[in-house]
Structures are given as C-alpha cells and as structure tokens.
Image (cartoon, rainbow, N blue to C red):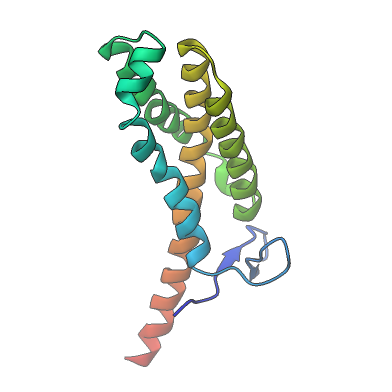
Length: 155
C-alpha cells in the first residue's frame, strides 16, 4: 500500500501542504525510497569496479580507498555544515536542488578521465548525496510521525 506524504513548508503559521511531483500528482512513500536507493548504488558500483579502476588509472590501493572515502567524507562535512540552517528552506526545494547536484556529480564521475577528476567528481557526488539522503529521511519521518499522532487517538 502506498501512502501520500505531507511535507511542512516551514512557514511561520505552521501550515502544511502536499508533497507533489513535477507533473502535479501526489508523491508517495515509494518516491523517496527510490531516490535513496539511487545513492546506495554508489557502493554497489564502485567496489566491483575497483580492480578495473586501479588498473586503468594506475591507482594504488590507498588511492582507490581515497576515491571510495571521498563520497562519505564530503557527505559528512556538508551534512554538518548545512545542519544549522537547512530547516529554514522547504524540504521539497532542498531535495530538488540536492538531487540535481547528485545527478551532476554522477555525470561528472562518468566523464572523468583521471584519478584527480574522479576524486573531485566523487566529492561533489557525496556532498549532494548526503544532503539528499538526510532530506529524504526527514520527509519520510514526517509522514510516520503524523501517522503515529493519528494512532494515539485510536487507542
């Protein structure tokens, strides 16, 4: 069963509005899960490509581990840097901007030709991927919190 989501618009009057797709239809719980799965694919893609990347780019094991760690490190740094003020913006806008950056980082990884450009591309990918993951979990958390509040009245 797929449930419609509500998302706070962070306005001063505390009103809320539906989370909608670009075509105007209502968003569902499956939408954030699909976007979150896209960022999980990072680890499923990089690890099997390890021997190929090490051979083609003449990387040592330490340099390859830096490529892997760039995503996670930038996700953490940008997450900590944006945490104090990210809630001032509408989650839908934050998700859209971060997912566009995630797509740009993914494309940059695809066209990188050297280890240095791949490292920078993975850092960009991680910076936007970390923010999009946190935003996706916040959107899903809103729905479950409201569902829990509704269940209180049932008991």
